[in-house]
Picture 1 (cartoon, rainbow, N blue to C red):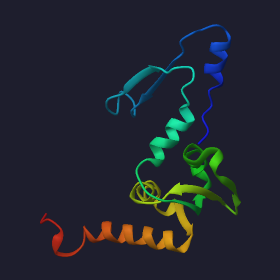
Picture 2: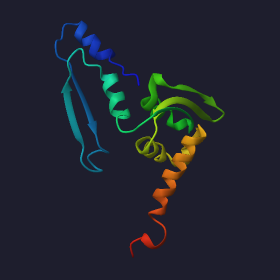
Picture 3: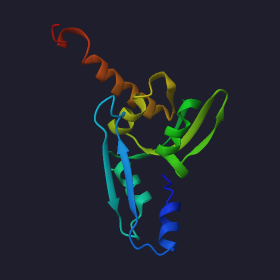
Picture 4: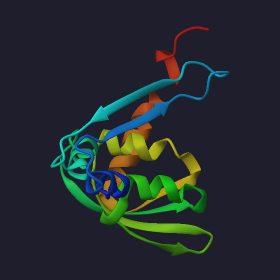
Length: 148
């Protein structure tokens, strides 16, 4: 994952010793709460490495996977994979080859896109993802469902 620190580097080059990053999260004041945060990180802090660690810390083995996404998700794909991925046009979609930590965290991330994303290969990861989805679906079928 690549992280652009252009503005931070520019501020430090101009002589500023502390650079504060600010961000917000929320749908907006008419939709509910909006939260804001600010942080000052040490100059030598490797934000790209830290973000990659957070994304990859949850699960096991690294696999190179092949995926296909609707073009509308290009920003999401770039945010998630950055420089670690090979991203190319594939008809009206985009194809991605990237290393990921396979397991429930990655599968949950992928599942959120529904029909806008497809795990193409390798076959054993595709089977694992299918089983992960099947187990989730089984929780909502049959006798285990609560009475409404």
